[in-house]
Image 1 (spheres, rainbow, N blue to C red):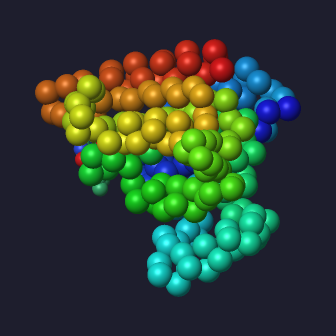
Image 2: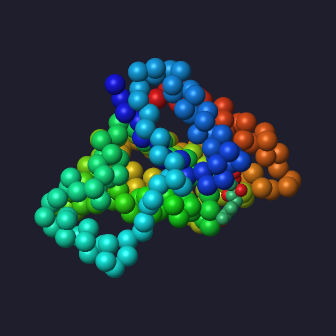
Length: 197
Ligand SMILES: Cc1cc2nc3c(=O)[nH]c(=O)nc-3n(C[C@H](O)[C@H](O)[C@H](O)COP(=O)(O)O)c2cc1C
């Protein structure tokens, strides 16, 4: 049985277009893989904290002792153990909402999700793939300024996740574009990709 970790950073919740993509992904995967287990983390509901001076020092002391079973690494252990990861987050300020960045801070730990040796950094995560779902107000396809999808792709490399799927609906807030049709096309793509996972 595969364990799929689902990270929901759709801050607008039921109003979110990105959440519609996530719902379609889950519907499809549950239909195709009745035996897969889905662990859904609604990031807005977690008591996630970014590292401050004191909490980072405390975490680093645990890392130095290799105390990886400490509660502070629980999200990291869960992330490391997942067989596949789905992330749904809208495009905010050229990147992703802060709640997702804070979650990443919490899972990113030397010895938990990545390692380091003389050759450099290497990933420790079990997941074979990450599926990143997003919607964007403007059209950003191919732009170097787009730092949401490219950030998640870089994280896959960092954590040792070999395959990265990125599905986006671009231009949803542009008045001269048909946002409804763009979203429908993205939902079809989500379904198509999920049927192949
Ligand atoms: C706080 C915030 C920041 C945003 N930043 C950008 C941006 O940098 N570029 C852009 O094209 N759209 C931006 N948008 C628009 C969203 O990307 C767009 O509305 C998206 O579809 C929202 O997804 P949702 O419906 O899932 O909430 C921003 C929206 C919000 C609320």
